[in-house]
Image (cartoon, rainbow, N blue to C red; front, side):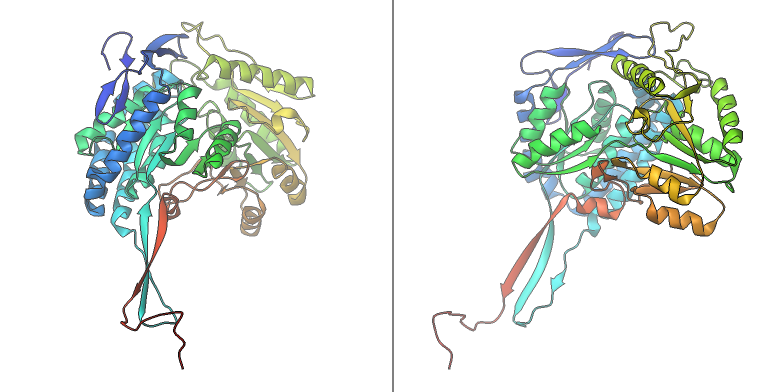
Length: 496
């Protein structure tokens, strides 16, 4: 990387920075200003091949030679260094994706907990002894790494989502190649710089930047044992198909159309705050965005009015400033998607309570800002109630009883998350069981922890990140049989 007004980044392979093999590069944009920000290596098949080979060499060499305990301690040291550089990482990410500096900083800080947790699990990966009928045979299992893991990351929370896959993969003994989003590639290089400082051997973590070409080359490479992908449903389908053609496994954390359900007995103040946080705190640019709100008919008007008043007061602006409450869309394409989807929803009968347009922010006239938008009295079949926007767009509908709202909440192809707001203990846990979602939050929203599994039902993904079970997805089991008796087992000698 060069340090000037317009930074330029190269790939990081085997502990060295190097340009794309054919010298190509691409430019990233600052969504707040709408202006070019920096350039990155436009990687192709040759660059991916070198990165996979470096990861393979490290897998067979220095990384394999370290004990699990030492590997785990290196991950912990890495976590400390990331937390110590949280502000620098956060500024890189906010400048590239437009999300609030405070949120990006909090994510960079908290990732230390993930690396402590999985670092601590590294030396607790154990096999078992299998009791067999033949007592002279010792049968035991070994839990071994898969090999080289491709970690393909979206633009909305780069460091956080990278480490959610990388931490368990590395703790399990694998090596990795990271392909960050072309929108937010910069922070990945800060992560590998800090990994080097922490003492993680060269080649264990590699970074190749680029567009779709680089991602496809990584997914297709025979040396990649597993793909950990976070992104859109369409991207996940394409990756699963390509990986399946060569029988490589995938963990897919995909999109959602998550419902926030507010019952008549809900703590209304908390519910309103939870709905706002679920959709506007990250400008809707999160897979678990609570983009559908279902409010009981008896409190519908009250909740709608409160949400309207709060939405009107949200301050848009520079995400690096402390008083900004919502930043821009990350890309011009995402801004256009926000606009187009709202226009279609209105054409299908949705009523705009607030927003619905590109926002004009003084001083940032070319920025990709979109107003916090509330659409109400939504019909169940409205396009925007069934498709992910990934922007600050909330659709609200009223409901009469549990059965009605359950049917509507579950009536999408997604199943990532859901929120339930009620003081009724029975109802809360009944809803949790019946909602088709990988995560159900009761009287809270967007909560997450390193030791609690996260992932989707239906088209929202395959597999889980976080928690003990996530590390199992980066391991394979070997069964070892050992005959301890000297008795000859000859199938062609008849025993009398």
